[in-house]
Structures are given as C-alpha cells and as structure tokens.
Length: 435
Ligand SMILES: [Zn+2]
Image (cartoon, rainbow, N blue to C red; front, side, top):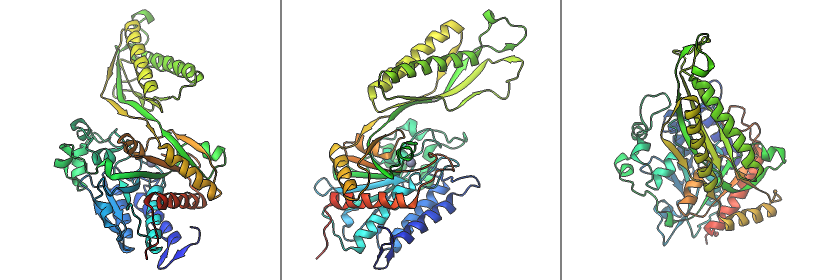
C-alpha cells in the first residue's frame, strides 16, 4: 500500500489525515483521551464517518451507536442475513485516560483503507465487507470492557447499564443515551447483529506488550485472547487504633491483611506459572482512606482492585477460587473482613484456526514474519469469537506498550499490517473485479 495512489484516493494521505485528526480530538496535554460514550469518542466517530462518506462509502449508526460502513456496491452489508453474511473488520476509537493515539484507531483506519481500496479497484465482493467502529472497548471509564460489542449481541445486563462512571457521577445508560443509543432495544437484550449473518471477523491492533519489539517482528498473527476476572474494589475492614498503644496481638490491621493476601497470591502465581499455566495477576489500585489515614494510625480500612487474566477458563476459575479461599483464611487469622464488589468476567477466546492459517500464508506471501502470539489484552474479537463468529487478529509492533502516551507505532509497520489485512479481507469476502 506504500505510496499507492488510486484514482482520486491517496491512501497514505487518508491514513495520515485520520491519525492527525484523531490525535487532535484526543489531545489532553499529556496523551490522548477519548472517553467511552463521551465527547472524544463521539468526535472520533464523526471524523471517521465523515471521511468514509466523503469518499463515497455508506455509513450508518446502529442502536448501540456503533458505526458501520460498507461499499456502495454491496449496501446489503449493513443488513446481512445468514443467507448473505457479511465479513466484519473492526476495532474501537475510545482510549484510556492519557493513553496513546493508535490503540484501537489503527484497526479502524486500516479497515477504512481496505474498503477504499476495494472501491477504487472496482471490487464487488460476494460477501459484503462491513467496517465497524465499535463503542466502549476500554474498561477504564465504567469498569467494563467491550460495551459496544456486548450491546451488539444483546448482552448488556441491567447491572452493566447501571455501572457508574469513574468520576462517580452519571451511569453508563445515561452516557449511551446521550450518544444516540436506543436504550429500549438494548435493555430488551435485542440482537442488533445476528452472529449467523457474520461469516468472519478481522481486527488489526497494535500489540500492547513488548513481544514483537523484543523479537523484531513488524506483524504477527494472534492465536487467542486472554479473558479475565476482576473486582474493581475489594474493601478490607479491620480496626483503626493508635499506632503506639495497640500491641501486635490485639491489632486488626487492614493494610497488613491486604498485603498478606497479595503476597500469598503472588506465590501461588509463581508456582502455577512454573507448572506451565497461562496466568497474570494484578492489583492495580491500592489505597487507604486519605480522609482518615495517618502515619500514627493503624489502618482500619484498605481497598484494592483485583484482576486475573488467562487464555484458559479453567485457570481463571481455579485462581479465583484460590483467592477467595486465601481471603477467608486471612479473615480468620487477622480478624478482618474482605468485602467484594460485583465480580466482572470477560471470557477468554480462541481465534479461528483456519483464519490464522490463511493469515500466516498471506504473511509469507508478503514477506512478513510467519509468527503467532497470544493476546494478553482483551479485544472486541473475543466477543465475536464467543458468539461463534470465526475471528482472527493481526498485531502490529508497538514500542513502549499501550494505555500510555509513550505508545509508538511505526507507519511502515502499519502499512505492512494494513496490506495483510486487505489481502485477508479480499480473500474472505471473495472480492472480484467488477465487469
Ligand atoms: Zn484496544
């Protein structure tokens, strides 16, 4: 795709314009902030929709305020049926607070370039390609990931819709309604897209870990996506007291109880990993109550977040069970109480073996690495895969990780990944040059 100028479409210029526009929309002085079902995500959706329309593509919003784009030659891609299924290519446009510009956006831009190229080449694919910008992929804003894709398959619960914004202010349902979503249809659990009407799902994404950089791979094909089990807030309740006056045997120190739980779980993690299990454990938010904590006060309360991720459902369940068992043992030993908020689950997902094979073959044809990696981070592809849609992902090398302003993607790597996506999409849609 490098330097390719099609009749009336300079794809490099379209990509550069979109990335620059998205960076401008998200600029927060430190990194990029495009809030889930908020102003930044909304403006990013408008930019992509406007760009697609300007180049003659058809764009519509669904009842969850997701954006769907298709070729004018195959408008039925917007209302696919099991008899005439579409092929979805998708990613998201929201970001974490102070994140980077390419997490999510790279996949939407690559998908748009592919559709523009099909249009310029006069392709009329047998299976309509359907580009989707999916809402609310990041969990940073409401504590739940994959909001737009869950809504797409009628899988947002009343509890999900009542999740509070990270500021503690409004709830998810209010933000969705303000963005134009049809809450009545979502509350009813209506399927906005029939999984049987989707022949395949492709997502290109920057890698969010250090593996591709360390192995000097510009691209790789994803084998599976780790699921997770989380608690946004676990409260450990002990008893406050004077730090000088209460002896050790009479203390109910919430921080030491919390720390012991973390240390025990870290040790379990080490042992399980040595046994070859796929597992990562994180306590990302930890704190005492600043309104009452002091150097000279035994902490009566400590709160923390809990997250475990694995490609295996069994490993997730086993580790979660272990965590609750250890918490009960510490409650007894230290006379504290652990209070868990709602458990949040994201299921792990396997990518489609046939699609992975095709992507590897096409990688070889393009002179790209024929390599696979697992995805440690979650993606909308997991939702589609768990609905039974054959799904596959392409990773692009990305320096400095993601979910931070230092995230870096080389445009040459992006072009290579976009080229691979385009070939895969042409193949999966059965694109043919129109007579
Ligand atoms: Zn992402």
